[in-house]
Amino acid sequence: MPKDSKTLASSSDKKRRNAQDYQSSKSKQDHILLRLEKGDRAHLDAACSAVGLSRAAFTKLYLMPLIDALAVKLHDIEKTRTAQHISLPTFLRRAIDKALASPEDTSPPPAAVAHEFDSLFDPPDGEA
Image (cartoon, rainbow, N blue to C red):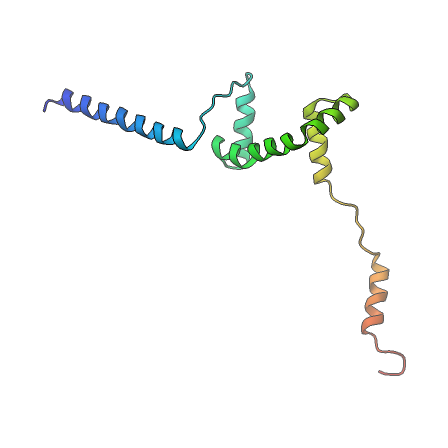
């Protein structure tokens, strides 16, 4: 078999395998095209690399749960943010900041802890 025939055959086999892989993948997953604004892909890629994930993995682990949560609360979110006259990104940032804020320190003062410790472990007067 001449070299050119071999190349054509392997190229043909590769195309056939790629088509089969694509059809197999298509039956298991939805393939969609998202049109992003200029520069948005860089934001997506930065978010993906910040957690060391591919775009597909990032979408599965972060974006889909976010979409699910938004879908459940979308009516309330829209009502609240329009009443407050804020954009959706601002609303989401505030909600995330509030959720991540450290709770107020509700631990008892050190003197109260020391007194409780002493009352538990110090022997009563006259028993030492």
